[in-house]
Image 1 (cartoon, rainbow, N blue to C red):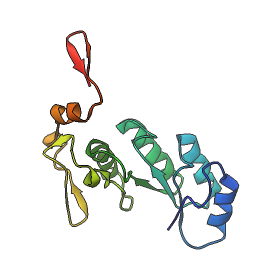
Image 2: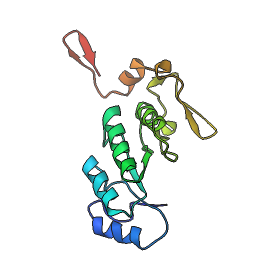
Image 3: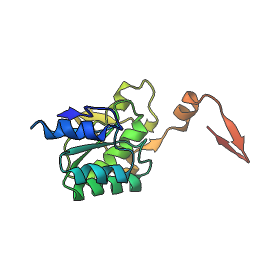
Image 4: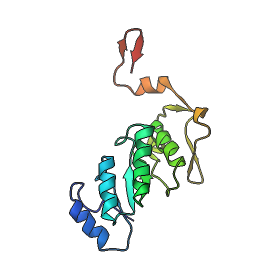
Length: 158
């Protein structure tokens, strides 16, 4: 697979690369909105598109983005190799609802401190999610990683 062969705003260059090779081409940095996914799908040359929680920050928006690409004949690739375990968990939950190829939800494996308890685990190359309620946010880990803590009313905000 060729991932994002040209600059994010060079749609013509990316299209030329995708058109000139039989190697599947995926857009990553060019995909910033559902409109970008539509644009990529309408070109008819891109087989894959990359999505990250940072670009589509809710389960609903990530799911809509994924579905838009699928409806246009593309496969979504979810994940971010530099994400927290919480972000990887959310992306993996969306991936469960779609039959796409493997994702890149491995950023958490690089982090020394995890936000979820129990920590995410991988076996045979797969994230073990369990039931949605199987993991809880470790507020102490969030506080430990926070640069400062503020208080709003009676609730501390990290």
